[in-house]
Length: 212
Image (cartoon, rainbow, N blue to C red; front, side, top):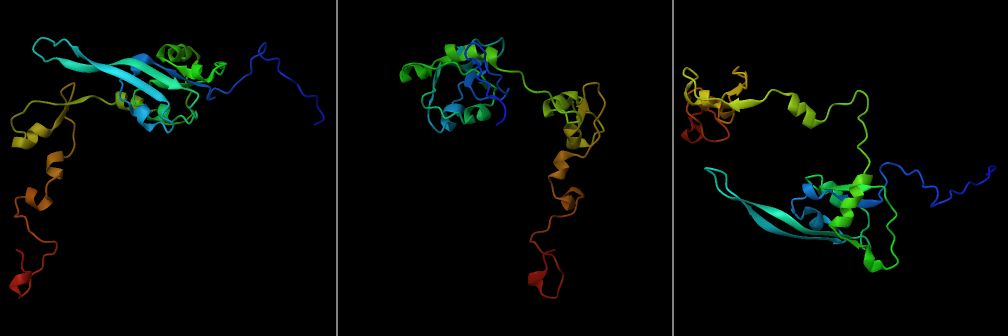
């Protein structure tokens, strides 16, 4: 209160906004698969998506595949409430927050921006912040550092069917571990004992209580 107020001379001097400011939503068109998840989860229904299916040529010995081609992706910022749900639910990282805020219009109908305008704001998206010191690495990096496993061919002496379920590393070494197929079966049955029915088992003089 004892200091003089300082007025920033905008637009000559741009404000220093935080990196996580919710200014406008940017679109990376190459990452969008037209899954419509963002449009369905939007509480204001301000996202409009049009697409069509395209058949890819079949490789040699394979069959043709289809993919979605994005025709239109528009956001009506006159209806948008900047909640960020569309960015959170996008499974392919096609939407990002940009701190850009200079897109005011004199007509409210001009706030409906198509994919070409949304793509121009990708350049203003700040890079993700660095991880804290001592924090755990991301799951993607941890998964990439583990040795790749694959199901090798049947090897004699591997115990019949259980030998087919063992995992082998890319260098040929066997990955030690329990048999997952045997873990899903009853322990008593895996040892060759007959499987008993009922939740309780007790021997008594009454034949109705004898489940053996």
